[in-house]
Length: 108
Image 1 (tube, rainbow, N blue to C red):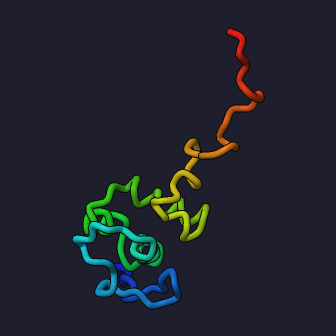
Image 2 (image 1 turned 90 degrees about the horizontal axis):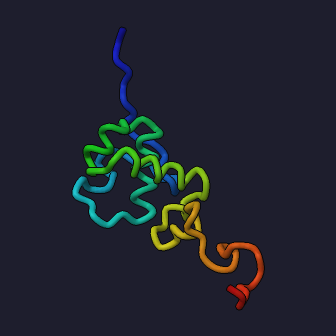
């Protein structure tokens, strides 16, 4: 059986072609939305394996899978680290996060 040829390019999150050379550098420390989405697109499109992506970028499988889930559930904006409270269960803010039951009582 012949090994499958890996993809040489895939379509990125903004419609552009992504190649191994155009992926974020392996030493990337600042993960903006676009870079995360490009790595997810590369793995989904067969440009990189999950194992290769995790090794290349020093990611855990759980971290990568959280990026995938965020995209699947909330689109690219789900990757914004400043908005994690709005997208992750159990971290809601504001009135909707308060328990029901009205205002607290003054009685013990």
